[in-house]
Image 1: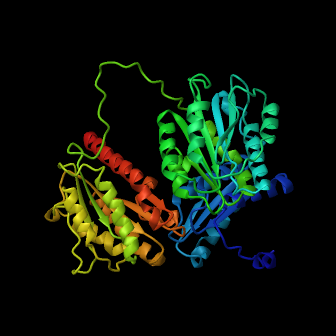
Image 2: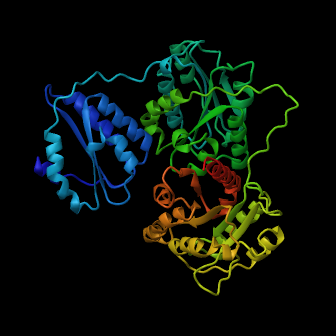
Length: 537
């Protein structure tokens, strides 16, 4: 056995802990010894690629009677994920380095040997029909020319597998399907097929149309046609599942249609397939939080790995669409935004090690935000963090930062110098948000830092070391990752736990301006949260 372990080859690539757990469970199912405890020891040095799928596979293993130990190595592990993997808190171990693993060897052995044979209840598939909860579910399938015919067939098989988990009937789950390319094809509506076998057969007969990727039209069809009052049930959850393998033809319109769908009570899941998917667009499509509503797989073959999790998440949606109330003379309360009643001081930190052109895209994003933020009164003050070099002045929160024209003018001549993210974040904390530089004692303090991969992992470690001090000073940090090589896991290390919404990703510097709506909404959310905390205190 030692020789076999020593001959193990490192695979490299992503961290598919979910697949490892699934394979382990399959081995136990095939080679189970009666009377012997079943044990799994998962060793990892970071967060898994798909945290929810990992937690789900760990749950299935535990249901099969397997006791799962989770061992985290290093400073990049996700402690919450380790807890979700392990059978109990006492089965979670953490060490600083792989060399230090030997320090827990005896303890791990004692724990493992003390296990008694666990009862192994039969593993049951997800309950048919979500425990009897009804739902109206619409699939929007990508039928564009970028998908090979064989992959389109795999997409259909995936949908067939997902719907087979539901109880299909007039009183339980109903399913509609459309495809989209240049145009939308509505293959059948929610009322058409009330028998599971008939539904799956109809899905298998759908043909690929080919063309471009008009995702916006697909979401509009979900809203206007499938969930129109005459075609959907008002007292059940409305769910749209959008599958795509690339960027839509009109990302802004896609995001707009998705916002309208969500406002109308439609819960949107976004499933991205392949390396050409725009993650930012998936997040713009999906409902919140993204970790519950966004799925990504490397290819159409891998779609099968998320079918059970997608079905489970669909079953967990419980909120039916809100029925609009009759119009009355009651005054509608204003939308909560950063305003004189909810003031905000916002400081942008120019990204490190960028070209003048890239810097220009950042300034373009800030200019765009000046048109939608309340700068004229005392609602919002903007600042632009200077570099640690004294010859780069930038401008502080108190220097004409409530005048849009002056803000834009100051940005126009802003020079570009090198500085790592840690130094920039430290400057925001130590200088920018001091009252002597225009910060207000009662305002929500928000910093915005831009990060790419130019500085490497070391820069992020330095930046992460500044975060506890930022939090202690009441400063909220938004982190914007730029480029296709940024790691969401590493960016999450720069923010407070459970604040994933503070991380935004743009596929390129050129598309940075597309984040303006999302950033404005996040500013407003932070102002509202700040007010709620103040009321509780």
